[in-house]
Image 1 (cartoon, rainbow, N blue to C red):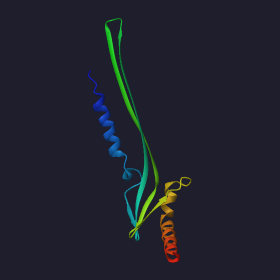
Image 2 (image 1 turned 180 degrees about the vertical axis):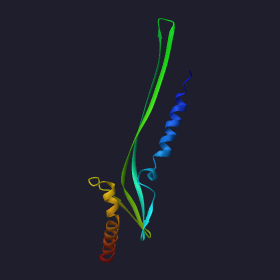
Image 3 (image 1 turned 180 degrees about the horizontal axis):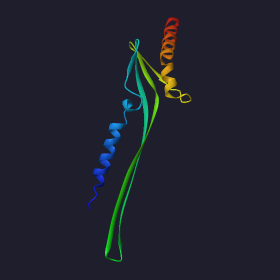
Length: 122
């Protein structure tokens, strides 16, 4: 049996590339009133492999190989745009992503209200 390590690694990498998308973790961008919200995630990956061969009593030979990959995905927050302004709203780790989704409209309004006040005083 011939094992093709390069092909196996290529298949694992392709699988991770197709699965490690914001859309598969928290969904696609969405519009909330005047605001466009784009989810942002952090991805960590690791790969491992090994192979070996051996001869037992000069008559039996063996060969083995293994490979694996792991992936961790963490929602970070949202890029939020209104007109030409853009902001990043961090997802609260203590309360999870669901709580962040519930707070998005209020947080967006507060950010843009504060920016408007800063521009008026400048």
